[in-house]
Length: 192
Picture 1 (cartoon, rainbow, N blue to C red):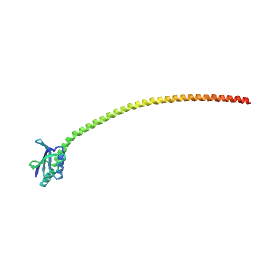
Picture 2: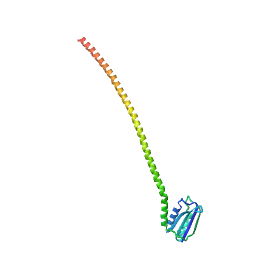
Picture 3: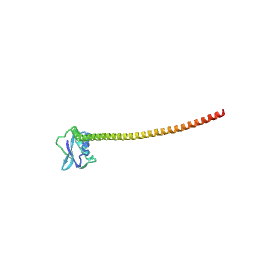
């Protein structure tokens, strides 16, 4: 027994209809089944051709009427006799897979190219960031070097002034000690 099912509506393409139909055909044990998209008088349509026993076909038609994809906009589901050849389910699945690979490959290539562009942009931005950080580090290093030199000079000058002040104090103290010793020597002579 063969049937043709025509699902029509404002939106039946690109909503996962054929995937769900193929899965239903697999679950119901069909060996010969196909589903494809068409446009009929400006309406989108999904056409199913199936071959199986009467129970399989009736169960499939019942499943189709009760399982409309969430994003689909269906206006009619019609079943009619079909006399032509119905391809094998495996061939339908292979053709469906190839169709989707055909859609996916350009998208994947675009993604690959965008990833390359992002990688190049990140690399360039990293290079610019490293260069800018290098300049800033060099600038900070130079500024710190100047400050360290300034501090070193200030410490050196302060050390020099401290040594000079200590030297003056020590020399005055030595002179004071010498004066006291001389005074003591003079007293010792007077006492002797």
